[in-house]
Length: 73
Image 1 (tube, rainbow, N blue to C red):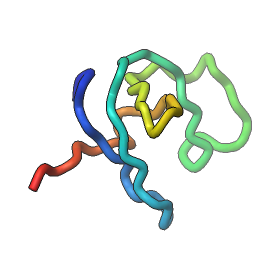
Image 2 (cartoon, rainbow, N blue to C red):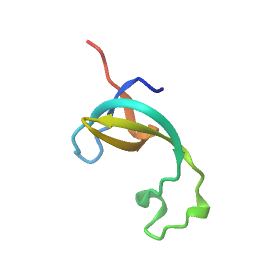
Image 3 (cartoon, helix red, strand yellow):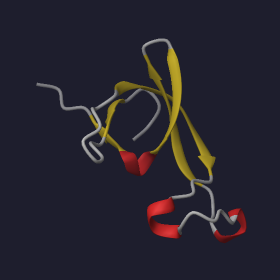
């Protein structure tokens, strides 16, 4: 995925899809409690790519692994 792509969030635990436009790609750390536990230790993880996604008038930063491209029909 790249800047300018239309994407939607993957459905996780029944959450609704959010659709938007990628306006930037950044590197950030993301602590996943379901894999790593509740005690945060930022030194244990490396930054990963995140997309800055414009959803309506709001910019959300979402890990790329949690996004999928929107299908054009």
